[in-house]
Length: 628
Image (cartoon, rainbow, N blue to C red; front, top):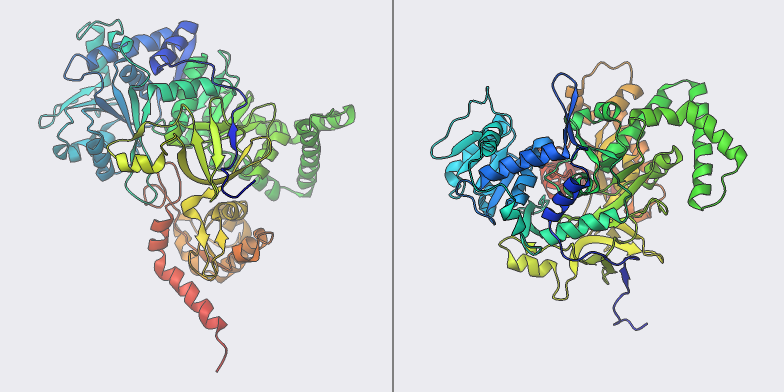
């Protein structure tokens, strides 16, 4: 093949089988499946879980919709939601969809100035806020928001006492629903919904912005409708399933997989109390399907490994034997070969002694996990599979609605994100960048035509910014972000993500970032694990709040040097970090080091630790200088 020939295009094995559609179709389909089914479930303060049937949820949606269109809002206007994931988020979203309004999602973790940016850039006329804290952010900046006129509070500060504020109409969600139920507003026959067209914009989702101000991704009804249908062709979700929803609904991943897909398929959606209660809520709700990010599975894995390490010699022997049996059985099943009676019998013993405890921690009913938003370690995916828990890794971006790839349950490839979903084409550019074309590709960036033209070619290919490769069966493997690639002073390229994954597998590492662009060698900036530190040095009285004091601890430094350098021994010489820099400060969203989707802001971290980084490289240079 000549060098000028374009790379091959990998298309989905199944074509897209549905015509144009809207999220209105998704909502009505899920309602008509069975109006009496349990649809939305949430935990109350007294510890009980209460459910709405699909019919009851639809009635609440109708009441909110009536109120929204009774005032100055018109179909096509922008309405924001500033809240954590919860049942009312879903109700507000559906009410806006059925009113022909465009939903603008805002992460509740954002500070007031970033809330101001999104509300102002989007031109939102109204906003749903979760509680008094989120309301305070809006009130702090509303005088700079010329379009914003209405605020709806899900949990009002005190006994439903909400008051207008300097020309800003403030109402509780309960007031909104009561007014809608009384019949005020326009007719309740979904007249606005009937007028929604596939090409209409359904939502604006602002990208996390690791290097610049976030951009509003415009997704149409057709984008999200087709992505919902394509997901049903891979993921076998039915009315018998229950999902635990806990990731931010502000992000496209949870919105599609834990919200639209579940409603359309007739599954019950249970809403976790918070990110910190996921483990408890899994046990209490017994989900059959869980959508998560790699950190969830890493925590489960780390908890198991810590338990083994802290156990006695007998426990370690039992665990190693069970893992060996699980791996052998996994090999046979993945190769589609008979497991055999002897191996199956041994696995039964391993399950009773080891793996069943893992199932119990997840509620005991999980059929599938789905992992997205970041690469999942193949080691962890394989561990879950060997233990009888299937994690289906997928891939996508906000700009692709988001799903482009998913590992099918009957043909999993660890380390890959699977083949493209129905209707999707994938091509690898000459520089390794992944290009996507399909019905899920966004309309563009709101108010940014130049950025849109840079992202989407004239013939419809979206430039993902990710680096990857396709195998002979069309399975995609992500290697790193294009902008994350480090180039050493000698001109050698380093993809930091796989190296960070190797280091992060150490029980002594809480977080890690590989740095060293344009340097002679990379270094690893590591946040040590407090629990692991206590295990390694049990006699030292120190609290987690004092972790910053450990940055200069020579014993910890020696331990981390050994851990990190041993983990990267299989990497090419130029890829291995030659120094480990410790920090006791965790990277957080609130601290500005992480985006709301927990992606590392490398430039922020480099700037924040610039002096210490320079000191490391200076000392190495001095060590390398010959003595006079």
